[in-house]
Image (tube, rainbow, N blue to C red; front, top):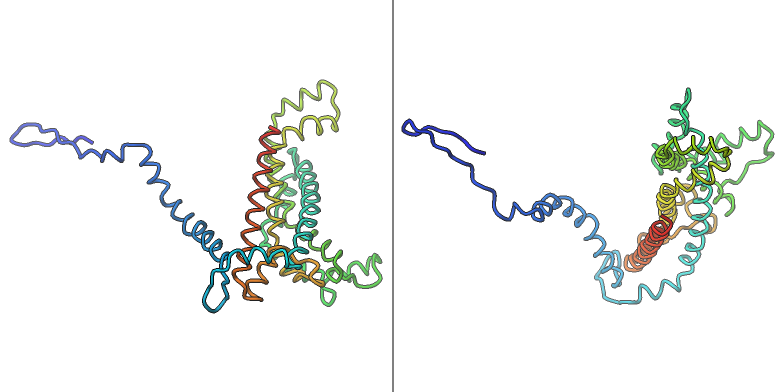
Length: 309
């Protein structure tokens, strides 16, 4: 910036100091602007990640001195029957939840896709459960389905649908069914919003051209909507699969892993090893294995997405 001043009746041109030479390079400016975010990521993500990896290589009790014992924490994972059962259950839960949640969310998105009177109300109503915290939603379902004071059993009895109380969490199959119902109620609206964004990005002219060529609704859906919606569906699947593999709140609060440890997820095993068995090193090893599996799965999904595009 240039400033004009007066000295002895003559005009003198004074210029402000030029910025340092290192600041004029784009690389230095970029690093400086990114420094706050990099600091937050380093403190809240990278540092705990390094600590978890180091803990997994040590016998790390909750109280006492840690001792290096690599690779014992990893080799004993294969001898943990609860974790192996949890892997099978989590995969089963992930497949069922992902399929049902995707179908319900796509159906809701197609239902509210077109603008018509009152459509804003239905979009809000479908999305509203997504604003409820997951822990709160689990407690809500626990209260609704409780056999002692829940209102669902009396309502079903009054409608003559059931003759005796249903053990919503008393058997492995019913506990899984009830939990999946909770997850669909909680996340269907959120996934609907993702798919609705993709649907509204499809040009209207494409649909009009297909109708003018005589295509029916099924042909339009299978040959236009689904192919053009593929990237959005892939994003929804990545979020759904990752969230299902990391499932914890719904099982910890709603079923507490029961009955007979039939609804114990992989993250619940990590929690139990850390805070019930006080084996932080073993829990850290399980966390690292789970993290590597998630990264590999997400990389595979992204590769399939790029190839399909």
